[in-house]
Amino acid sequence: MTPKLQKTIQNSVSISGVGIHTGVSTNMTLVPAEANTGIRFIRTDLEENPVIKADIDNVFSTDRSTGLKKENAEINTVEHILAAVVGAEIDNLII
Image 1 (spheres, rainbow, N blue to C red):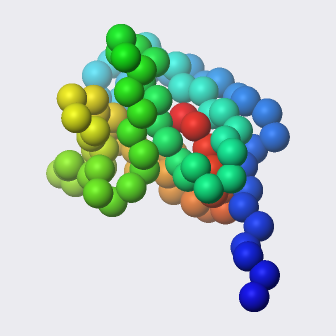
Image 2 (tube, rainbow, N blue to C red):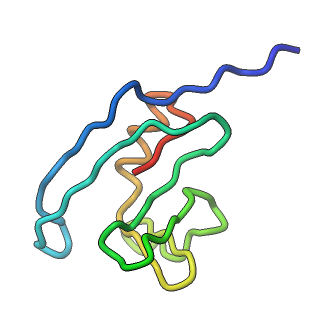
C-alpha cells in the first residue's frame, strides 16, 4: 500500500486582527512544516515559546469554543483555523 502524501503550505503567511473574545490586537503566522509533524501552535508571545499540538489529548475546553492547553500555555477558539486547515487537507503546519 502506498503511503498517503502529506501536504503543507508553500510559503509563510501572516494575518493580523482583533481577538473576538479579548478585543486585543493579535498576529498569526502560518508556516510550512515538515512531514509527520502535524498541526502545531507556537505561543511566540510567551517567554518559552511553548508548542501546543492540535491533538484531542490537548483539548481542555469546549464551552462555546475549543481550547488547547499544554502545561501552562493555552490557545483558545482554534476551531475556525483548524476547520480551514482540515478543509484544505493540510497535514503539517506551524501556527
